[in-house]
Image (tube, rainbow, N blue to C red):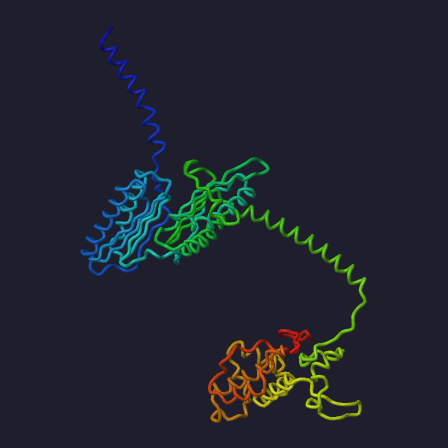
Length: 474
């Protein structure tokens, strides 16, 4: 056999064996160094040589961290001398070699800004940033933007709906995932065929979960501006978002988002909400028919009132004999006020007198009758206006303008108004007794007890009684 021919055969076998490996390496290796955004601070460093030395040391430290651990895709480094802080982050689907290649490209690009005290470079595959002070907790900052592709998706309507649902799921799930990174895809079913949306979301690992969520909320909004573009990115100080109609990560690198979506994905939530709403509506209709049937079978009862709550501006009502008996303490002589043309007149309840006292106090302080409407754009009755001012801690504004401000202090008048509001509470049971009122009036400062509850007053717009309603037999 010809020795040369034998050597040629061996060499041919070697070439055949090595060729697929070389071809595969070319296809797989992709550092994704498509430049998306770059810029620098408008301010220069004061000591360039010291800062250069510090920044070079910081960048070398970043490279060492990425190179020493095959699972590292994020690193920070800083030099106290020269005050140089830097951060690098690769997309988690990149290999270590691709991550280092992207970092190398970013370092070469960012050296163009070395005179500035801060700069950033963002690629599809990684980002690099340095500053003269710490920035690791920054999330969304001015300059965030969406970067749209120049081609429309083949199935615009279905693709757009799938993009919105997938971005919504990533916005919820990514902040809950350790490392703040997620890659996912979603099928878009259209009338002319199907399409697939591929998307990734990533936050800097030094931000908080809330900070990541806030940043991705802005990024998602920026990316959705591009819809129905087939490709879009959104960049910000602390996060990155990207979607595409073509895959840019492997299928085995996708993230199962379901465990991080709480009650399910956005599409599942719509189905759940629809089912719940339908069930609730059906139940309400059945209940309405049942109530209507019961009402028709019953005779309308005579309207009766709570004698102890008679100060709630209800108008004429009928009272039960037992209510009158309870309110007058079995028509005792101590509650008898006198005799009138229709018979004996009794005092109903001490709590009713307390309510009247509160009304008189407000009228004296404000110089306005309880039934008068204030001549202002709101047109509120006195009691309604008093409660609104009290809720906003401005009840000192109720004081009549003719009173001399030198004769009272703000705290004193606020305390008296609060005592009046205690007397005007809707529930007679929670109103203070007259002896308690005396103690409160003698005390210094504001009322030191539970704050008053909302009194009953007439709504000037709807002519209805507003306030808490209670029934008491005390």
